[in-house]
Amino acid sequence: MSARPALKIILVGPPGAGKGTVAKGLVDRFGLTHLSTGDMLRAAAKAGTPVGLLAKGFMDKGALVPDDVMVKLISERVQAADCRNADGSPRFLLDGFPRTLPQADALASEGLAPDLVVYLDVPDDAVVRRLCGRRTCPACGNVHHVEFAPPVQPGLCDRCGGALVHRSDDQPETIRKRLAAFAAQTAPLVQRYGAVIEKVDGNQPPEAVLKASVQVVRARGVPTIG
Ligand SMILES: [Zn+2]
Image (cartoon, rainbow, N blue to C red):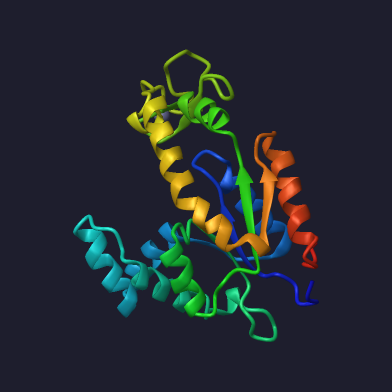
């Protein structure tokens, strides 16, 4: 293992794996900047940078932002001081990208191949149980869970009293389809990143998943802060 701490970190996991919690925890513990593709796209479009406007053109048409545009956007974003070590080397936690081998290639061609890939491993059945129980409030966006975060009054949002719905995204068939797509896309990535990938058991309480994730980052020689 090299002495240089792994600081280009990529977070991978199926929908419902709890990536949000892990990302936030890793950011807090290691002082990393969290880069999610959605946030970067929105920020660049708002800031009106050339790449941002290019990306916005695709989004306004409801089209997917092409890989080369997305990589340019990431490459531009990681120039910022909050994504750099004191010696100028990059440090970030990238979430939601790459999802495919061509995207991984494009990222590598910008010198941004990851030093560490944290892979949240959750069995399909556990994901289905987590996502299928979600009940969303269309009025305020609040999310309950029939098992893990039930509303005080069945079917009604705790925050605003609105009627909760079971979104089509959270129906078992839809979830299984998304999981199958994720598995098909991710298998070649797992192979590509073999040497730097660390699987974390994501089928445990959020605190335990975070703890295990912190351990794999710390094991690469990255000091925690605070
Ligand atoms: Zn509500």
